[in-house]
Image (cartoon, rainbow, N blue to C red; front, top):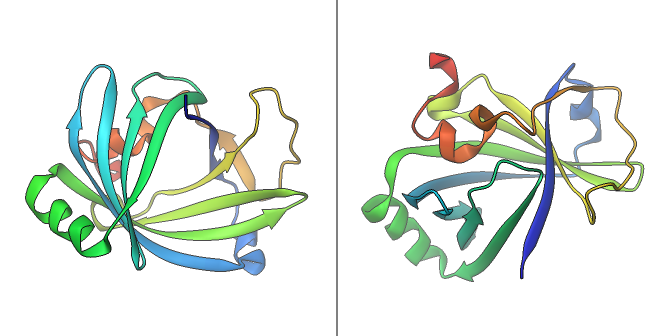
Length: 155
């Protein structure tokens, strides 16, 4: 079974910007969201993915991710998604042996900036960068599937 262990944080400062090693624009939408899983399409630069993620509120969730042709991904975003599209610019920032993903949301979620780290196991230790703020891993409002129907500026 595929699994993702991910922790989410707000940011305390913009100091991370000096350490960015790559950046890509993302657009994703949800085709369905049930009490068991969400089904989404994500276009990231010149690649696209079909993603199925378990609907549990935990840092560890079942996840399946399949690359699909980018033109198919763009068409699926236009034709099949419900709710609003999630748009963001993802910045990759390495810090003491881990890869941080900093998402700067645009579009309907303008103003939200979050850091995510994927871990190999739940109790894995990691160094917390000085720009890291409050952890929001257990707050469902910060899940992209929630943001598609409840944009950040409306909270």
